[in-house]
Image (tube, rainbow, N blue to C red; front, side, top):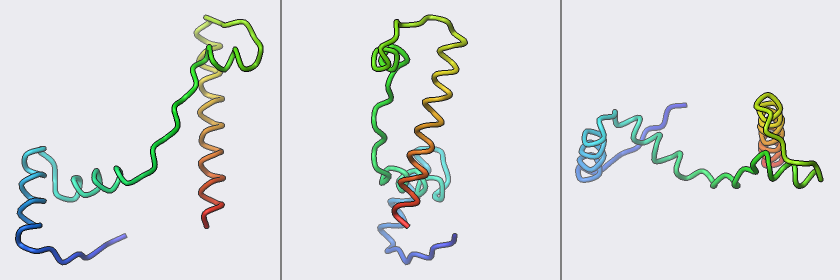
Length: 88
């Protein structure tokens, strides 16, 4: 999507100076600033916390931990998609 925005000379200078100081393009700086407007993500539960909630003994098997992390990530993505669908 393309957006056209009329900036004052001062705004343009601020944008340009900040982008140069961070070593990025003006477009990338604007994208970074816009990303900061997104609502914060809730803290993620650890595998140990998930085990405790499930009433299970803590695990230390790396493969099992990775599988649980994948499951958790999938659940978070599903929740995010559901929320986005509800906003439409």
